[in-house]
Amino acid sequence: FPSYRQGRFGVVYSRPIAEVDAMHSRVWQFNIRAGKVEEFQEIFYSLVDLARKQDGYRGGLTLSSGNPESPTVIMVALWDSQEAIRASERNLFLTQCIARILTCSDGVPHITEQEILASDFIATSARVKA
Image (cartoon, rainbow, N blue to C red):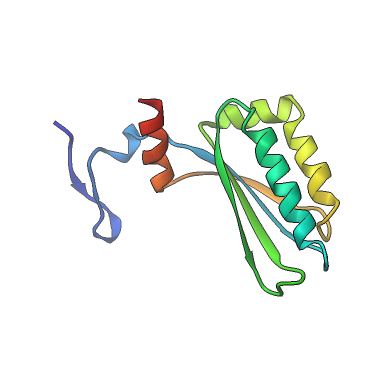
């Protein structure tokens, strides 16, 4: 039987969080230079094409705020594991991404890695694996 427990904010989990295969993310934050939004969108989709060839890549999204001509951007790439992220560094995928983003960003992007705490992406990924 699946176990149920009351979580934070009244959320009920069908199994303990520890049993969920945690996905990881690489999170980028940067500003797009004025007049480069369309170029960034083209670059993003070219990077998605490259990312889909990487083992463990699960998807990505980009959020923007601020001035529409030169927005602040948060770009999130979802990965099956931290090892999948490391593999993308060893095969120079990350280097290619940085080089392309630098053509339209105002400065060097701030890049962090984070574990996904809760997301519908986790459930979707688990269904795909099954």
